[in-house]
Amino acid sequence: PSTSQISWHNACSFNLTNDITLFSQLYPLPSPIPIGGVGGSCAATHAGYLTCLPTLNYINFGLYCPSAPQTLLSLGHLHGCGGSFKTTADPNILHIYANPTILLDRVTLLPHSNLYTTSLPRLRAALLNSDNPHLLVVPKTAPPPGLFPPSLKRFVASYPPVQPPHPPAT
Image 1 (cartoon, rainbow, N blue to C red):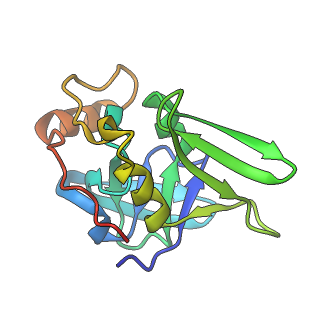
Image 2: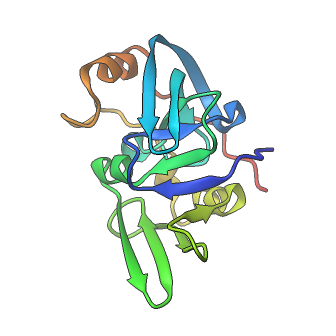
């Protein structure tokens, strides 16, 4: 089981994790992708598809960076894939939608931080919800223009997603 903290994040371009067990498919990148930010820098060495997010419109695409400090789920990538999010101020809650009608996650702001952490059980429960079987349907079309830079667009074309096993109930 994953021991890395998982947070929804609005400053990362793609989902990023240090936990290899979160992937249903993982492939080496042609060359490492440098990842930088306030917390330092590291390099993504692999990319693939995460089991804790919907396959819908490539929402589950992620980068593997062994030295990343935690798992970051990209709100920007989610939005580019047709998902959305909104916040409320009192209380501080982040609502994450896989599409306009399906609530994927609802998380509370951690006190004394700007982090919205989530958990594998919560994410996997949303995927196993029998009312939303289409969340795990593999995209049959190419990603929308602009979703991926050229190098990752070629990567996705070379390594398209396949039907993942249902995520384990946790």
